Amino acid sequence: MARNLPYDTADLREKDSEHVIHPWGYLKSTDKKDTLILADSEGIYVSDTDGEKFIDGPAGMWCVNIGYRNEEMAQAIADQVRRMTYYSPFGKLSTPPYAELGAKLAELAPGDLDRCFFATGGSTAVDSAIRFVWFYFNVIGKPNKKAVIARQWGYHGSTYLAASLCGKPRDKTYMDLMSDRVHHLEAPNPYRRPDGMSVEAFRDQCVKELEDKILELGPDNVACFIAEPILASGGVIVPPPGYHKRTLEVCRKYGVLYISDEVVTGFGRLGHMFASEPVFDIVPDIITCAKGLTSGYIPLGAFIASERLYQDILASNAETAVFSNGFTYSGHPVACAAALKNIEIMEREDICAHVRKISPHFQERLRGLGKLPLVGDARGVGLMGCVEMVKDRKTKEAFTWETGVGAKVDQRCQENGLILRPMGHLCVFSPPLVISPAQIDRMFDIMHKAIDATQDELVKAGTWKG
Ligand SMILES: Cc1ncc(COP(=O)(O)O)c(C=O)c1O
Image (cartoon, rainbow, N blue to C red; front, top):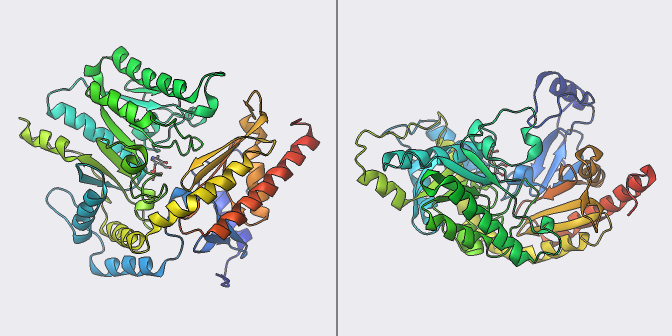
C-alpha cells in the first residue's frame, strides 16, 4: 500500500471544514485541524493522506467485510458500469444482476424468506420493511395494526422512520422523530441488569416486557417487533441466551411480525451469511440487510420477506394494491453486481468458516481487556467487540459523554496504527473479516496499551481513582 498519493492534507482539511456537514458531526467544534482524511486502503488497512497506515478496527462502518481494494470486485463493478450502467426496476422493469441477486438472497436467507426488496442502504431497507408491514396489514384487512415495537439502544438508520425506531438517547436531542407509532422496550443488556438478578431471570423479564407491551397496546394494534440480533451501534449489546427465540415465540403468539435487522450481523460478521437461524435459532418474518452485502464497495440494502406474507397479499381482495415505495437507486444494477461478486468471493474463500475459526481468539483477547481496571465490560460475539469504560467497576457508573473516554482511547490507538469507533464511554470494533490471528493480536495489543495510557491520563487529571 506504500503508494505516493498526491494530496495536500492541509488544503483538504480546510475544504472539508468549510464546505461539508459531517454525519453525526459536532457542528460547534471549531478545531478541524485533526480531521483524519483517508486516501488509500488494502486488505484490513487504510492510510491517510500523509501515508500513515492504520488497521481498520470498525471495517469502515461495520461493512468492508472482504477487505479493501479487492481487484476482482473492482473488475466486476467496472464490467457492470460498461455493460448496463443503470436502469430502474420500477414496475415491470428489471436488470440481470437485480434478478440474479434476488434469487441468491432467497437461497441464502433462512426458511421461506424468499422475496427481496432492494433499497439503497440500511436505513432505506428498514424504512421499506416497515412500510411493507403496514402495507401488508392494510391489504389483508387489518389496518389497525400500526404499532412498531423497538428497543432502547437499538439503531436502525437515519431516515425519519428508521431514526424514529432508534433508541440511543443522545441521537434524539435536537432531532424531531415520529412518536405515535413507535414504542421502545428496555435494552436487553445483561451488563446493565438489576443488581442481584441472574441473566436468565433478566432474559425472562425482557421477554415479559415485550409481551406486556403487546397486551397493553392490544395485539390487534401491533404490527411488528424490530430487533438487531446484536445491538451493534448501541455498544455491541449481546442479549441473554434464549432471548431471540423467546421473543419470536411471543410475536407468533399475538400475530406480530418479527423483523430481524441484520444490517450489521449479515454477511459473515458472526460466521454465517445470516445470523438469525444458525446463531440465534430464529426464522423471522423479515430480515433487513445492507453493509456487508456489498462489503461497502457500493451502497445497497434489502429486506427479504417471508413468501407467506407475499402469498397473503396475492390472496387478498386488494386488486389494485401497489407497494408505492422505492427509490431511483433501488437495486442499482452496479450495486447488485457488486453484491453478487461479494457473495461469490465470500463463498469461494469460505470467509464465514474463517470467521468461525478465528472468532474464539478474537473474543478471548477481547475478554482479556475486561480485566483492565478502567474497563467495566468487554463484550462481543463473532468479529464484533465493545469495551465499556466505567468510573467504578463495582457500581458500574459510566463516564459522562463529555469525558470523551472512548475518544481518548481511540486517539491513543490511532497514534499506534489502529482506528476504533468511539462512542462516549464505549469503543466498538468489527474489523474486516479477512483479518488474521496475528493481526488480531496486534489490534488488541494496541488497544491494551491505549486503555492503560488513557487510565494514566485520567488519574493525572483527577477524573478517575480506580
Ligand atoms: C442495525 C442497523 N440497521 C440499519 C442501519 C442503517 O444503515 P445505513 O447507514 O446503511 O442507512 C445501520 C447502520 O449502522 C445499522 O447498524
